[in-house]
Image (cartoon, rainbow, N blue to C red; front, side, top):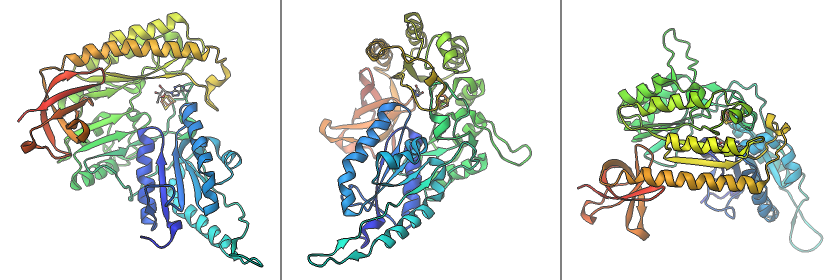
Length: 467
Ligand code: 5AD
Ligand code: SF4
C-alpha cells in the first residue's frame, strides 16, 4: 500500500463511451504520476467524477453525489469534477459544491499532471497542523484550493496520451475524432466537447497495431460523429477517408472485430457499407441516430437531413451482403412536436426495423439554440410518448430477435453469469447472446465461439455453444 493517502484516487464515470474511454486515459495519466487507483471513496485522497451533461438528470446526479460526499471533506479528501458538466458549468461548480477543488474539461486532461502538482502543493501549504493550547493538534482552517482547466471551442488539440489504462484486455476503444461542429439545436455537446478535431490515420493505425500486439482482438473506433472523420495527415496521397480508415483498422493482423460509434446520418456515405461488405472483420452493426421521423421536427432540430435521406442510407445498409443490424436514438417531445410528427417517428420505426432504440424525453440544455423555444409539451405527455414508442419498439424487437432461433452466430465470450450458469456472449451485430456450454468445453473469456440460438427475448438471445 502507498504510504501517502493523497496519492490515491477514486474515479467514477457517468455517460457515454467517449467518457468511459476518457476515464481510461485519465487513469493511465494518474497512474503514471504515481497515483494508485482505489475501489472506494473512503480509501481515496482524491475523488474524481467524470461527468455527463447530455440530459438534465445526468447532471443533477453529479451534484447529488458531490453533495453526498461533502462529509468526507473533513478527512482532507480532495474532490475533482471532470468531463462535460465541468466544461459546461465551469467555476460555477465551486459555488454549488464548495468542497470541490478541481474542475477540468475533457480537452484539458493533458494538463492534469500540472494541475495535480498544483493541488498537491496547495495541500502541502495547508498541511501544517495548528497545535492548540490543549487537546490534539487540529488542522489549520484550509484556504480553498481551486484548480481549473477549461477550454473554449478553439482548441485544436486532441487528448492523446500514451498512458491509456484500458480496463478490458480483449476489446478497447480508440478515439479517432473529438468534438462536434453539427450544432443540433437541442445538444450541448458542441459546447462541452469543443470543435471537431480528427487524429491522423497513421496515429490511429499505430494504436490499433499496438493493441493487436497486446492481444486485443476487438477495437471500437469512437467519435461524437465518428464518420465525420477527416484525416489531417500531411503526406500527399496519404489521407484516408473514414471508410478507408475503417477498412485499414479491420485489416490489422490479429484484429477480429471493428466497431464504430456514433455515426451521423448526414455524413454516412455508401462507402461505409461497401467497406463492411468487403472487410469481414468490420462488424455488421451501425448505430445511426435518427432522433425523429418527421421532417418538420428534423428541421427544427437542425439535423441536416430529411426522413427520405435517412431512409436512403437505411436502404444502402439493407442491400449489404451481410445483414447489418441497425440501432438508433430518438428524442420525443421536442418543442413543437405534434401528434402527427410523433406518429411519423413511430412509422419510421416500423419501416426501418431497428434492433435497439435508445429513446429520451427532450430536455432543454444550457447554451443550446432550442433553449429559446418554448418547452411546451408537458412532462406527462413526453412520458406517454416515450412509453408508446418503447412499447412499439419492443414489439419490433420481439419479432426481429425471434428470427435468430435455430441460427448459429459467432460470439465473443464476455464473461460468466454464475447465478444462471450461463456464459455472456456478444455477436458481431452487437446482440447479447448468452449461452450454456458443457463444463468440459468451458470457453475462455475473450475467445470466439459458435453459438446456436434457442430462445429469444426482446433485448437478447439465449443459446448453446456448438461443440
Ligand atoms: N434532450 C433529450 N435527449 C437528448 N440527446 C441529446 N441531447 C438531448 C436533449 N437535450 C439524446 C440524443 C442523442 C443521445 C446521445 O442523447 O438522442 O443521440
Ligand atoms: Fe449533439 Fe448533434 Fe453533435 Fe450529435 S451531431 S453530438 S446530437 S450536436
